[in-house]
Length: 318
Image 1 (cartoon, rainbow, N blue to C red):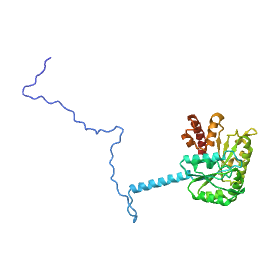
Image 2 (image 1 turned 120 degrees about the vertical axis):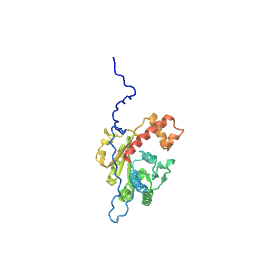
Image 3 (image 1 turned 45 degrees about the horizontal axis):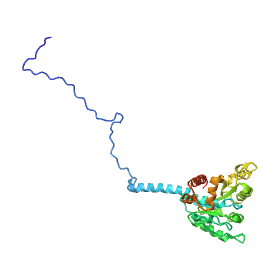
Image 4 (image 1 turned 180 degrees about the vertical axis):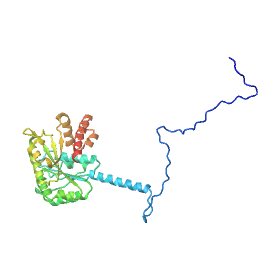
């Protein structure tokens, strides 16, 4: 193949180049093209309104304080101070045990609690050293000393604490009458505290007496009273004529008056039952049992289960 040689002395023409393409600014293919941001302008103020307060530490602090106040208000409602009376006309059914459980529950929540024992015969609650229980003599010569109870009410409304007041069977009738006659529940409520009446129904031979005590309380107490019924199965199943408490007429007729039920489940005698009985006889709290060398590992575990079961029920009624 032949071709024409370039003439000597003549430069070879440069190759033709495409015109340069404009470079595109690197950016995410999903991003929007940049837009001009208008310069902020000061808002127009109405005449004589003064300068606007710019957002800063002062305004945010005010907002935070307002939120904190709201939260504190909600918490104060959740933790409204309460006055718990344990009332039952039948003795030996576990009233003091119930009072001790309520006291332990409130203490576990970090709440201040004053425990008061008014039982003139068996001051069981006063035997719990952990509570610092205070004795109060309400009975004298078989009659209620109303002045002493007046002083208790004065203290209840004055102190910023919960109160758990354990009452004996001997003072059940006069004390229930005093509370109703003197409108004590509404007096206490008028000072920002909530009254809760606790009563105990037990199985075994005392079942009918405790049912009568429950019916008496419902009849005497104002309709707005919170009544919590404890079903203590320690002495046997709570049944009469083949019916459980919830199926009995005395409950069905007054179920709208019952704020809640707490069941102390029956335990087997060889394990749970003996552990609970030893704890009661020793006047110890669940926390004291957990730290005591007198209770073995498994006994502590079983009592921890009892505590959990009861405290979970109290979450719904206190």
